Structures are given as structure tokens and as C-alpha cells.
Length: 239
Image 1: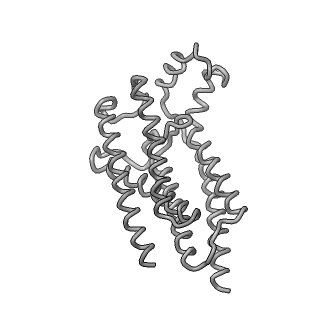
Image 2: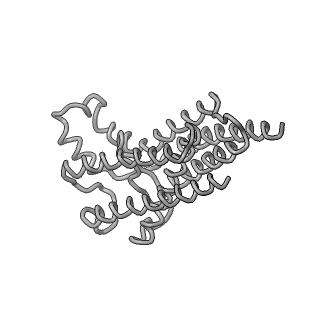
Image 3: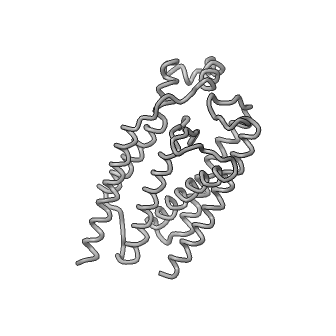
């Protein structure tokens, strides 16, 4: 128990520090491209900056996977520390943005959430709720791992977690994807000759509506997987 508490403290410190690092990068980018703190329509950036941002986002995920791997003694606990670290990083990213830039104005303010494999957007409250859900699963795994030898997520639980996560990604990318597909056929997006036009249309994008139905369905599916995991393991503890 003492070892897990020590891990919790240091993973939390690492994740909060990463959240501030992410905030610092965004503060610099907004000073350069969004001095009025209004994110939409998107600002024109050079190819080198865009590529750097894409690689930075990928590097961030690799770092979070790395801390999860180092903190956990087996796959399931590494997974738990990864999603916990991801969630704390994301929550504190917004906390630091609010402290430094007084942004977002509210939890319903739209944000650019991710750029891979396409642009994800949504109101700030959506990724915050998702982060809380991730913490709920992570804490459950860490807790039950103390009580049960050979703790695992079973196939139905994995199924609902993966399915819900997939639907969640669709929800976050829905508005931008439908916007861009109203302008181009899917095959046109991969044509080099259309590169400049696709970029021009993308820069004109302004969020229209967040698909709450898809998001809620995704969260319910994920919570079903988490609920099954909690229920099964509470029963095992009582035996």
C-alpha cells in the first residue's frame, strides 16, 4: 500500500508538471497566432510548425505511455497509471490555462483537443468529464490489484472500454469531419493537387455543434465496462 501511495504521488507530480509544460507551449502559440485568445477560425501556420505540433502530440502520448510502463509492475497496472497520468495532465492543462490566460471562459468554451488523425474539437467540459472517467477506472484497477492476485480486465470489459473509446473519438472529430466532407469527397482529401484548397477550407472551420448524443453514448458504454469491472471484482473480494 505504501509503495502504491508513493507511485500515486510521483505520477501525479509528473502529470501536473506535464500539464504545465503543455500549457506553456499553448501560451506561446496563442501569443503568436491567437493574441485575442479566440481559436476559431484557425490561424495559418507554417508547415514546419504544423509538423512540429503533430510530432509533439505524438511525443506527449509516448511520454504518458512511458510513465505508465515505469510505474506499473504488470500490464494492467501500467495501463492504469497511463490513463491516470493522461487524465491528470489534461485536467491541469486547463487549470493552468485558466490561471495564466483566464481561458476558457466557461466549461462550454470550444477547444481544439487533438490533431491526430484529424482535428478533434469540443467544449472543454467534454474532455474533463472523460478524464474523470479515466481516473475512476485507474483507481479501481489500483485498488483491486491490492486485493486480488492476477487481476485482469476480462473480454467483455475490454470490449466495452475499446468500443466506447472508439465512439468517443468519433464524437470529438464529428463536427470537423462532417464540415470537411461537405466540401470534399473522401478521396479528394488524399490528393496532393487538392492540398492547398483543403488547407484553405480547414482554416475557415468554425465549430458548429457538438454531437452530445454520440458523446453520451460513448460515455455510457465506457461506464458500462467500468461498472462490470467494479462489480465483478467486488464480488471476488466478498468471497
